[in-house]
Length: 224
Image 1 (cartoon, rainbow, N blue to C red):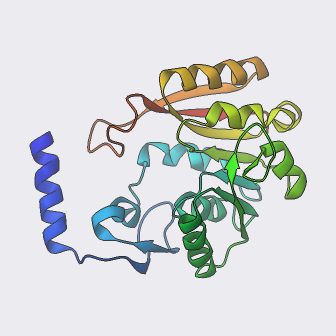
Image 2 (image 1 turned 30 degrees about the horizontal axis):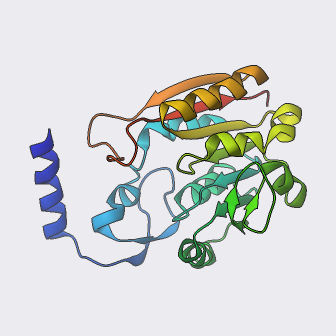
């Protein structure tokens, strides 16, 4: 399998142009939207295969008219997907890196959806660098759906969403980074009565590498 992956990567790097350019996505769940694509790094997104294990779950949980929070919005792929699936309902994209925030502004300006950007970390405290989901819900709107991919801070983010989770139970898809983080998220969400499905990464050309030894997704249905 490693030889196959290396062979496919070599072919891709040889025949596809290098460099990032804004391109309209021709396939998949974000079809028709414009993103900054470097074929050597974003080829899956261009083909609509990025984290394809989740596509059916996103389609199930993001309904027309649903307002969404994209927590960890780098690149804009998930925010555009949510906006498309919700048929243009508002989306807020949360991102803490300056360069990534600048890119989000540029990407969203080339599309037509109502996507706002909140700069900073999402955590369990509100300060000059961080915001809680509860506070963001008061500032923007109460989300019907939350996607979360924040490299190990997911338990803190859920702790900062206690009001939203208890009172509204939005659907969630959470990428967990580590067994301890997964267990912490499950403790919170099971106590609230969420219906939770765990999805493993595919073993065929997996997306993630060795940054974290344990990466899975929690697909959480609320009471919408």
